[in-house]
Image (tube, rainbow, N blue to C red):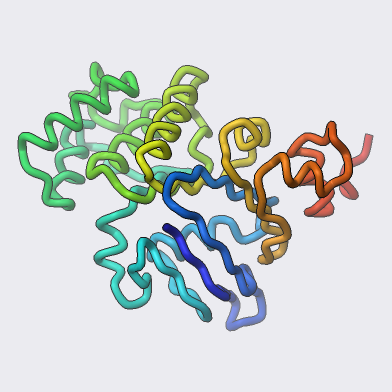
Length: 248
């Protein structure tokens, strides 16, 4: 479970509040979509969840582990896929995955089983012996996904995971997320692709100007909007005032 209580984060010596009193719970067995316009606080929230940033106020618990007090335990149970994966380009794909496996202390037999299984699943097995510098953006994204899943995390956090993936790879990732959800894992991902969030997520949270302005299953958000035919995109634009900026 992901549990945020009154979480805030400011920049520029407190003059810019990126996240403002965010309270949110995401239980195991749920795919949660985190939506918001650029600069709304999505990436800041994710960086606090994984321990790259420390919140100024509030508490973040990841399966009961406090991110400020026990970040080592937190990192052991999460898998993280950033929007722009960064690699050691001179390493081969298999070399990088073994490096990640070393970080998590995975046994030789277990790591080889997982690397073989995941690289085949994400159609990267034939490229693992190549240097990462030769990879396309989509291949790097697949490598990042595989490395985040190697240790079988209880909480899977993704920041714009579909960017750069071809339709087949996107489908494979969505199916993987569903299987993890069925196994009781917690899935938290941000996306700008509204139709994916609408079809895939059990609940969506919409953040605007650092505040959570909506958090519910899509059908409930549609009822609240008063329009039975509303799409998630329509609801998103209305709640974030984005519609006011659109001209035809």
